Image (cartoon, rainbow, N blue to C red; front, side, top):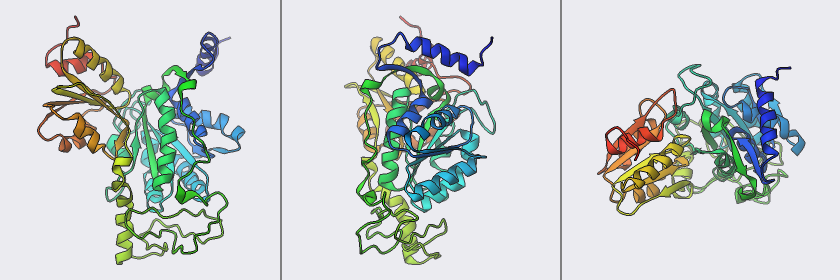
Length: 408
Protein backbone atom coordinates (compact mmCIF):
# COMPACT_ATOMS: atom_id res chain seq x y z
CA UNK A 1 0.00 0.00 0.00
CA UNK A 2 1.39 3.40 -0.99
CA UNK A 3 0.83 6.06 1.66
CA UNK A 4 0.11 9.68 0.73
CA UNK A 5 3.27 11.78 0.91
CA UNK A 6 2.24 13.72 4.04
CA UNK A 7 1.29 10.54 5.87
CA UNK A 8 4.50 8.83 4.81
CA UNK A 9 6.59 11.74 6.05
CA UNK A 10 4.66 11.78 9.32
CA UNK A 11 5.31 8.06 9.74
CA UNK A 12 9.03 8.59 9.10
CA UNK A 13 9.13 11.43 11.62
CA UNK A 14 7.46 9.28 14.28
CA UNK A 15 10.02 6.52 13.76
CA UNK A 16 12.91 8.98 13.97
CA UNK A 17 11.36 10.58 17.06
CA UNK A 18 11.35 7.26 18.91
CA UNK A 19 15.17 7.28 18.97
CA UNK A 20 15.52 10.81 20.39
CA UNK A 21 15.61 11.99 24.03
CA UNK A 22 12.14 12.75 25.39
CA UNK A 23 12.62 16.53 25.35
CA UNK A 24 13.84 16.52 21.74
CA UNK A 25 11.06 16.48 19.17
CA UNK A 26 10.98 16.74 15.40
CA UNK A 27 8.97 19.73 14.28
CA UNK A 28 8.63 22.04 11.30
CA UNK A 29 8.69 25.80 11.68
CA UNK A 30 4.99 25.89 10.82
CA UNK A 31 4.18 23.40 13.57
CA UNK A 32 6.25 25.42 16.04
CA UNK A 33 4.38 28.61 15.15
CA UNK A 34 1.15 26.81 15.97
CA UNK A 35 2.64 25.46 19.21
CA UNK A 36 3.81 28.97 20.11
CA UNK A 37 0.33 30.35 19.45
CA UNK A 38 -1.21 27.74 21.74
CA UNK A 39 1.34 28.48 24.44
CA UNK A 40 0.61 32.20 24.11
CA UNK A 41 -3.08 31.60 24.78
CA UNK A 42 -4.45 31.89 21.25
CA UNK A 43 -8.10 30.88 21.43
CA UNK A 44 -9.27 31.62 17.90
CA UNK A 45 -7.80 30.67 14.54
CA UNK A 46 -9.28 31.01 11.08
CA UNK A 47 -7.41 30.26 7.90
CA UNK A 48 -7.53 29.08 4.33
CA UNK A 49 -5.08 26.40 3.15
CA UNK A 50 -2.22 27.77 1.06
CA UNK A 51 1.27 26.45 0.42
CA UNK A 52 3.64 26.87 2.25
CA UNK A 53 1.56 27.99 5.28
CA UNK A 54 -0.84 25.04 5.41
CA UNK A 55 1.12 23.36 8.21
CA UNK A 56 0.07 26.13 10.60
CA UNK A 57 -3.54 25.80 9.47
CA UNK A 58 -3.56 22.01 9.95
CA UNK A 59 -1.86 22.07 13.35
CA UNK A 60 -4.26 24.68 14.70
CA UNK A 61 -7.27 22.78 13.34
CA UNK A 62 -5.93 19.62 14.99
CA UNK A 63 -4.92 21.04 18.39
CA UNK A 64 -6.82 24.23 19.22
CA UNK A 65 -10.29 22.71 19.87
CA UNK A 66 -8.79 20.41 22.50
CA UNK A 67 -7.55 23.55 24.30
CA UNK A 68 -11.07 24.97 24.41
CA UNK A 69 -10.51 27.29 21.46
CA UNK A 70 -12.10 27.65 18.04
CA UNK A 71 -10.36 26.78 14.78
CA UNK A 72 -12.17 27.46 11.51
CA UNK A 73 -11.52 26.62 7.88
CA UNK A 74 -12.64 29.81 6.16
CA UNK A 75 -14.00 29.94 2.59
CA UNK A 76 -11.26 32.41 1.60
CA UNK A 77 -8.52 34.61 3.05
CA UNK A 78 -10.70 37.71 3.29
CA UNK A 79 -13.18 35.83 5.46
CA UNK A 80 -10.40 34.28 7.54
CA UNK A 81 -8.89 37.56 8.66
CA UNK A 82 -12.32 39.14 9.15
CA UNK A 83 -13.29 36.29 11.48
CA UNK A 84 -10.06 36.81 13.45
CA UNK A 85 -10.61 40.56 13.81
CA UNK A 86 -14.12 39.94 15.10
CA UNK A 87 -12.93 37.35 17.60
CA UNK A 88 -10.20 39.68 18.83
CA UNK A 89 -12.69 42.52 19.26
CA UNK A 90 -14.70 40.17 21.45
CA UNK A 91 -11.66 39.42 23.60
CA UNK A 92 -9.99 36.29 22.19
CA UNK A 93 -6.35 36.15 21.23
CA UNK A 94 -6.59 35.48 17.50
CA UNK A 95 -4.34 34.41 14.64
CA UNK A 96 -4.43 33.58 10.95
CA UNK A 97 -1.81 32.28 8.52
CA UNK A 98 -1.27 32.72 4.80
CA UNK A 99 1.28 33.23 2.01
CA UNK A 100 1.80 35.98 -0.57
CA UNK A 101 -1.37 35.62 -2.69
CA UNK A 102 -3.54 35.35 0.43
CA UNK A 103 -1.77 38.28 2.06
CA UNK A 104 -2.67 40.43 -0.94
CA UNK A 105 -6.34 39.67 -0.22
CA UNK A 106 -5.97 40.44 3.49
CA UNK A 107 -4.42 43.89 3.18
CA UNK A 108 -7.66 45.90 3.42
CA UNK A 109 -8.59 44.05 6.61
CA UNK A 110 -5.10 44.54 8.07
CA UNK A 111 -5.65 48.27 7.65
CA UNK A 112 -9.03 47.93 9.36
CA UNK A 113 -7.38 46.20 12.34
CA UNK A 114 -4.78 48.97 12.46
CA UNK A 115 -7.43 51.70 12.36
CA UNK A 116 -9.64 50.04 14.99
CA UNK A 117 -6.59 49.26 17.17
CA UNK A 118 -7.40 45.57 17.21
CA UNK A 119 -4.62 43.17 18.31
CA UNK A 120 -4.02 40.38 15.83
CA UNK A 121 -1.22 38.02 14.77
CA UNK A 122 -0.79 37.13 11.09
CA UNK A 123 1.73 34.51 9.98
CA UNK A 124 2.94 35.25 6.45
CA UNK A 125 4.99 32.33 5.10
CA UNK A 126 6.71 33.64 1.98
CA UNK A 127 6.98 31.86 -1.33
CA UNK A 128 8.33 32.84 -4.74
CA UNK A 129 6.21 35.46 -6.50
CA UNK A 130 4.80 37.47 -8.09
CA UNK A 131 1.16 36.37 -8.47
CA UNK A 132 0.72 32.61 -7.97
CA UNK A 133 4.47 32.32 -8.46
CA UNK A 134 6.25 29.22 -7.27
CA UNK A 135 4.07 27.73 -4.56
CA UNK A 136 6.76 25.26 -3.50
CA UNK A 137 9.73 27.62 -3.92
CA UNK A 138 11.02 29.74 -1.08
CA UNK A 139 11.65 33.47 -1.16
CA UNK A 140 12.00 36.59 0.95
CA UNK A 141 10.09 38.82 -1.40
CA UNK A 142 7.23 40.02 0.81
CA UNK A 143 9.32 42.08 3.23
CA UNK A 144 8.16 45.48 2.05
CA UNK A 145 4.71 44.24 1.02
CA UNK A 146 4.20 43.21 4.64
CA UNK A 147 5.48 46.43 6.18
CA UNK A 148 4.20 49.02 3.74
CA UNK A 149 0.77 47.56 3.04
CA UNK A 150 -1.06 50.41 4.76
CA UNK A 151 -2.16 53.66 3.20
CA UNK A 152 -0.17 56.38 4.94
CA UNK A 153 2.93 54.35 5.74
CA UNK A 154 2.15 53.39 9.33
CA UNK A 155 4.64 51.11 11.06
CA UNK A 156 3.55 47.52 11.54
CA UNK A 157 5.71 45.27 13.75
CA UNK A 158 7.27 42.49 11.67
CA UNK A 159 9.04 39.55 13.34
CA UNK A 160 11.14 37.11 11.33
CA UNK A 161 12.40 33.72 12.64
CA UNK A 162 15.36 31.80 11.26
CA UNK A 163 14.56 28.31 12.58
CA UNK A 164 11.84 26.19 14.18
CA UNK A 165 12.65 27.17 17.78
CA UNK A 166 12.49 30.85 16.90
CA UNK A 167 9.14 30.27 15.17
CA UNK A 168 7.83 29.25 18.59
CA UNK A 169 9.52 32.03 20.55
CA UNK A 170 8.66 34.86 18.17
CA UNK A 171 5.03 33.75 17.93
CA UNK A 172 4.69 34.18 21.69
CA UNK A 173 6.40 37.56 21.38
CA UNK A 174 4.04 38.55 18.55
CA UNK A 175 0.97 38.02 20.73
CA UNK A 176 2.55 40.07 23.51
CA UNK A 177 3.41 42.93 21.16
CA UNK A 178 -0.04 42.84 19.54
CA UNK A 179 -1.73 43.43 22.88
CA UNK A 180 0.80 45.91 24.23
CA UNK A 181 0.39 48.05 21.12
CA UNK A 182 -3.21 47.18 20.20
CA UNK A 183 -2.34 46.51 16.58
CA UNK A 184 -1.61 43.71 14.09
CA UNK A 185 1.80 42.02 14.27
CA UNK A 186 3.21 40.14 11.28
CA UNK A 187 5.20 36.92 11.64
CA UNK A 188 7.23 36.85 8.43
CA UNK A 189 8.53 33.36 7.75
CA UNK A 190 9.49 31.63 4.50
CA UNK A 191 8.98 28.28 2.84
CA UNK A 192 12.28 26.79 4.05
CA UNK A 193 11.86 27.92 7.66
CA UNK A 194 8.20 26.93 7.72
CA UNK A 195 8.41 23.49 6.14
CA UNK A 196 11.85 22.19 7.18
CA UNK A 197 11.59 19.55 9.91
CA UNK A 198 14.33 19.82 12.52
CA UNK A 199 15.00 18.75 16.09
CA UNK A 200 13.70 21.09 18.79
CA UNK A 201 14.66 20.88 22.46
CA UNK A 202 11.35 21.62 24.18
CA UNK A 203 13.02 21.78 27.58
CA UNK A 204 14.84 24.96 26.51
CA UNK A 205 11.79 26.77 25.15
CA UNK A 206 10.24 29.67 27.08
CA UNK A 207 6.89 29.13 28.69
CA UNK A 208 4.35 31.90 28.32
CA UNK A 209 1.58 32.36 30.86
CA UNK A 210 -1.54 32.98 28.84
CA UNK A 211 -3.08 35.00 31.67
CA UNK A 212 -0.25 37.57 31.57
CA UNK A 213 -1.75 40.47 29.68
CA UNK A 214 -0.69 44.12 29.58
CA UNK A 215 -2.34 46.51 32.02
CA UNK A 216 -4.55 48.02 29.34
CA UNK A 217 -6.14 44.56 29.02
CA UNK A 218 -6.53 43.94 32.76
CA UNK A 219 -10.32 44.18 32.61
CA UNK A 220 -10.69 42.45 29.29
CA UNK A 221 -11.86 38.92 30.01
CA UNK A 222 -15.06 39.82 31.85
CA UNK A 223 -15.84 42.76 29.63
CA UNK A 224 -15.98 45.10 32.63
CA UNK A 225 -13.68 47.62 34.23
CA UNK A 226 -13.63 50.21 36.96
CA UNK A 227 -12.23 53.09 34.98
CA UNK A 228 -15.10 55.55 35.38
CA UNK A 229 -13.22 58.35 33.67
CA UNK A 230 -13.23 56.47 30.35
CA UNK A 231 -14.04 58.95 27.59
CA UNK A 232 -14.35 56.83 24.48
CA UNK A 233 -13.25 53.70 22.66
CA UNK A 234 -10.03 55.33 21.46
CA UNK A 235 -9.37 57.80 24.26
CA UNK A 236 -5.83 58.95 25.08
CA UNK A 237 -4.28 62.07 26.57
CA UNK A 238 -0.88 62.01 24.83
CA UNK A 239 -0.41 60.79 21.25
CA UNK A 240 1.84 57.91 22.33
CA UNK A 241 -0.61 56.53 24.90
CA UNK A 242 -2.43 53.28 24.18
CA UNK A 243 -6.18 53.34 24.94
CA UNK A 244 -7.58 50.81 27.41
CA UNK A 245 -9.24 47.90 25.64
CA UNK A 246 -12.89 47.04 26.12
CA UNK A 247 -14.37 44.04 24.28
CA UNK A 248 -17.41 44.20 22.07
CA UNK A 249 -20.33 42.72 23.99
CA UNK A 250 -19.18 43.93 27.42
CA UNK A 251 -20.89 46.47 29.63
CA UNK A 252 -19.47 49.42 27.71
CA UNK A 253 -20.41 50.74 24.31
CA UNK A 254 -17.61 50.05 21.85
CA UNK A 255 -17.63 51.88 18.53
CA UNK A 256 -15.34 50.33 15.92
CA UNK A 257 -14.89 51.89 12.52
CA UNK A 258 -12.31 51.90 9.78
CA UNK A 259 -13.31 55.43 8.81
CA UNK A 260 -11.48 58.48 10.14
CA UNK A 261 -12.88 59.03 13.62
CA UNK A 262 -12.48 60.92 16.87
CA UNK A 263 -11.64 59.39 20.26
CA UNK A 264 -15.26 58.31 20.71
CA UNK A 265 -15.17 56.42 17.42
CA UNK A 266 -17.50 58.91 15.76
CA UNK A 267 -16.94 59.53 12.06
CA UNK A 268 -15.15 62.82 11.47
CA UNK A 269 -13.10 64.25 8.64
CA UNK A 270 -10.40 66.79 9.37
CA UNK A 271 -11.14 67.77 12.94
CA UNK A 272 -8.09 68.32 15.14
CA UNK A 273 -9.06 65.32 17.25
CA UNK A 274 -9.39 63.04 14.22
CA UNK A 275 -5.95 64.03 12.95
CA UNK A 276 -4.58 63.38 16.44
CA UNK A 277 -6.06 59.86 16.34
CA UNK A 278 -4.29 59.20 13.03
CA UNK A 279 -0.98 60.56 14.35
CA UNK A 280 -1.44 58.44 17.46
CA UNK A 281 -1.53 55.24 15.36
CA UNK A 282 2.12 55.88 14.46
CA UNK A 283 3.25 57.60 17.65
CA UNK A 284 2.23 54.72 19.90
CA UNK A 285 4.85 52.50 18.26
CA UNK A 286 7.51 55.03 17.17
CA UNK A 287 7.65 56.40 20.73
CA UNK A 288 8.43 52.85 21.96
CA UNK A 289 10.59 51.66 19.07
CA UNK A 290 13.57 50.90 21.30
CA UNK A 291 11.40 48.61 23.45
CA UNK A 292 10.29 46.47 20.51
CA UNK A 293 13.59 45.05 19.31
CA UNK A 294 14.84 41.51 18.77
CA UNK A 295 18.25 40.93 17.17
CA UNK A 296 21.20 38.58 17.55
CA UNK A 297 24.50 40.46 17.45
CA UNK A 298 27.71 38.53 16.81
CA UNK A 299 30.15 41.42 16.71
CA UNK A 300 33.92 41.15 16.39
CA UNK A 301 36.23 43.91 17.69
CA UNK A 302 37.84 45.93 14.90
CA UNK A 303 35.57 44.38 12.28
CA UNK A 304 35.48 46.31 9.01
CA UNK A 305 32.70 44.27 7.40
CA UNK A 306 29.19 43.70 8.74
CA UNK A 307 26.89 41.02 7.34
CA UNK A 308 23.19 41.65 7.95
CA UNK A 309 20.58 39.00 7.31
CA UNK A 310 17.24 37.59 8.42
CA UNK A 311 15.05 34.51 8.01
CA UNK A 312 16.43 31.38 6.41
CA UNK A 313 19.30 33.31 4.77
CA UNK A 314 20.68 34.12 8.22
CA UNK A 315 21.67 30.47 8.54
CA UNK A 316 23.93 30.75 5.50
CA UNK A 317 25.22 34.08 6.81
CA UNK A 318 26.28 32.50 10.13
CA UNK A 319 28.23 29.82 8.30
CA UNK A 320 29.84 32.34 5.96
CA UNK A 321 30.92 34.64 8.79
CA UNK A 322 32.52 31.76 10.67
CA UNK A 323 34.43 30.63 7.57
CA UNK A 324 35.57 34.20 6.88
CA UNK A 325 36.86 34.50 10.44
CA UNK A 326 38.71 31.23 10.04
CA UNK A 327 40.36 32.79 6.98
CA UNK A 328 41.49 35.79 9.04
CA UNK A 329 38.76 38.28 8.10
CA UNK A 330 37.56 40.76 10.75
CA UNK A 331 33.83 40.48 10.26
CA UNK A 332 30.64 40.91 12.30
CA UNK A 333 27.12 39.51 11.93
CA UNK A 334 23.76 41.05 12.74
CA UNK A 335 20.71 38.78 12.48
CA UNK A 336 17.55 40.83 12.71
CA UNK A 337 14.39 39.22 14.09
CA UNK A 338 12.41 42.45 14.44
CA UNK A 339 12.60 43.80 10.90
CA UNK A 340 10.19 46.61 11.78
CA UNK A 341 10.34 48.90 13.58
CA UNK A 342 13.93 49.05 12.35
CA UNK A 343 16.32 48.38 15.27
CA UNK A 344 18.16 51.66 14.73
CA UNK A 345 20.28 51.63 17.90
CA UNK A 346 21.35 48.00 17.50
CA UNK A 347 22.27 48.67 13.89
CA UNK A 348 24.23 51.81 14.80
CA UNK A 349 26.19 49.86 17.43
CA UNK A 350 27.02 47.10 14.94
CA UNK A 351 28.16 49.68 12.37
CA UNK A 352 30.89 51.18 14.56
CA UNK A 353 34.19 50.98 12.67
CA UNK A 354 32.58 49.23 9.70
CA UNK A 355 33.23 50.39 6.15
CA UNK A 356 31.31 47.67 4.26
CA UNK A 357 27.81 46.30 4.91
CA UNK A 358 26.54 43.20 3.12
CA UNK A 359 22.79 42.54 3.30
CA UNK A 360 21.96 38.96 2.31
CA UNK A 361 18.33 38.25 1.38
CA UNK A 362 16.49 35.96 -1.01
CA UNK A 363 14.89 38.48 -3.34
CA UNK A 364 15.83 40.16 -6.60
CA UNK A 365 16.55 43.76 -5.72
CA UNK A 366 17.54 43.86 -2.06
CA UNK A 367 14.25 44.89 -0.47
CA UNK A 368 15.37 45.21 3.15
CA UNK A 369 18.71 46.65 2.04
CA UNK A 370 16.84 49.51 0.37
CA UNK A 371 15.39 50.42 3.77
CA UNK A 372 18.60 49.96 5.78
CA UNK A 373 20.84 52.04 3.51
CA UNK A 374 19.71 55.36 4.97
CA UNK A 375 20.94 54.22 8.41
CA UNK A 376 24.36 53.11 7.13
CA UNK A 377 25.89 56.48 6.29
CA UNK A 378 29.65 56.32 5.91
CA UNK A 379 29.62 52.65 4.92
CA UNK A 380 29.40 51.05 1.50
CA UNK A 381 26.23 48.94 1.37
CA UNK A 382 26.06 45.99 -1.01
CA UNK A 383 23.58 43.18 -1.46
CA UNK A 384 23.80 39.43 -1.83
CA UNK A 385 20.62 38.54 -3.69
CA UNK A 386 19.11 35.53 -5.40
CA UNK A 387 15.72 34.16 -6.42
CA UNK A 388 14.50 30.62 -7.00
CA UNK A 389 16.95 29.00 -4.57
CA UNK A 390 18.52 29.64 -1.19
CA UNK A 391 21.62 31.80 -0.89
CA UNK A 392 24.66 29.70 -0.01
CA UNK A 393 27.49 30.54 2.41
CA UNK A 394 29.87 30.49 -0.57
CA UNK A 395 27.90 33.22 -2.34
CA UNK A 396 28.13 35.42 0.74
CA UNK A 397 31.85 34.70 1.06
CA UNK A 398 32.41 35.70 -2.56
CA UNK A 399 30.77 39.03 -1.76
CA UNK A 400 32.93 39.43 1.36
CA UNK A 401 36.20 38.84 -0.50
CA UNK A 402 34.94 40.16 -3.86
CA UNK A 403 36.37 37.14 -5.64
CA UNK A 404 35.43 33.47 -6.12
CA UNK A 405 35.62 31.66 -2.79
CA UNK A 406 38.08 28.81 -2.48
CA UNK A 407 37.78 26.92 0.83
CA UNK A 408 41.07 26.22 2.58
